[in-house]
Length: 439
Image 1 (cartoon, one colour):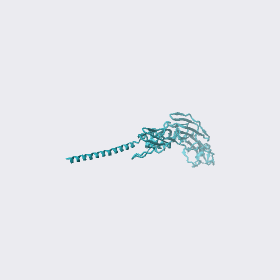
Image 2 (spheres, helix red, strand yellow; image 1 turned 180 degrees about the horizontal axis):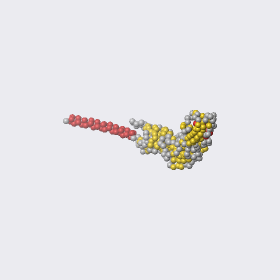
Image 3 (tube, helix red, strand yellow; image 1 turned 180 degrees about the vertical axis):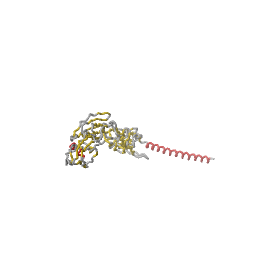
Image 4 (cartoon, one colour; image 1 turned 90 degrees about the horizontal axis):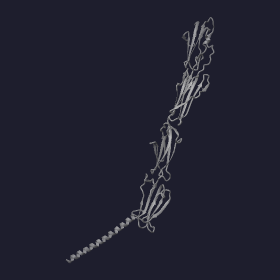
């Protein structure tokens, strides 16, 4: 019985010793974990998330460095985007703020570490001795340079090629995209800093084409530039009416000049030149112009004989030119028939007329000619020997409708005369106009 008690007491003693040692061991591990936890919290850095694109800050971030240990201190070294270096330390419970006075655009570098009271670097298990941070800051929008061949606010034909380029400075994030808008309509967009945009929309009633050029950098900053151009794709409309081109008339005529341009005529000129039957050239003074709703009109009247050349020229502000020409003739005089009266009352041995038409009739224009002998059509060059009295009638009509008629009575008698009607008459040289093409 005593042995059993002694054995039981012995086992209780051994169990107590085991439990005691086990409690000591667990107490040391907890203490080590606590120390490790303190080293993990050695310092604290707080800063906002990047508010731009691609990890950039568009507004200057505030960086707080706080020393949270009771021992040692937290040191930092900060190099901003301009290369200026700042360094310092934070002791127990102290916070250092890095913001606008230190931050610069570009790449800002921050190194943070801990030192003990003797200045030795404190290393925490599982963590680097020195922590590195980068803050990319770009708070400035790109600058835009834009150009056009003749400048802005000017008139262009067909299109205006606008060249735009964005620059972001050495410390900037770099221009990623440049875009051009016409009102709300996108004309084009280019990746990179440069682009050429072809503006083709036409101006109406002299209103400009409004352009907006937008440059965006990698950080998301945008800049805008407003520009204007004027584009006229169509030339002025010009015309001369009331008279047909190459008209030949025996009455007075008129020419109605007209020029029309929706964006306003920059230059307008009209001319009328008369060449008289004797070859003299005269420029006729311009008529009165009337303007209504962008349409310019003037009416000129012509009465004197001669050849007229009319012309109107108009140019718009973009440099388009339009020309209209007309040519016509006023011929009020009847053709002159030559040589017929000289034959009246003559006595001939035979009759033969073989002259050219130009030697028989004289006029400003081409004439139709009808020759009748004794009421019948006479064919030029035919010889008539039938004796007796004969009647010769010549009718000439020019292109203006003017008509001349000449007649002569003669006798064929071989017994009375040996005369012949060949080319014994002297004829004046015919005046014929020289035409020029008209458009």
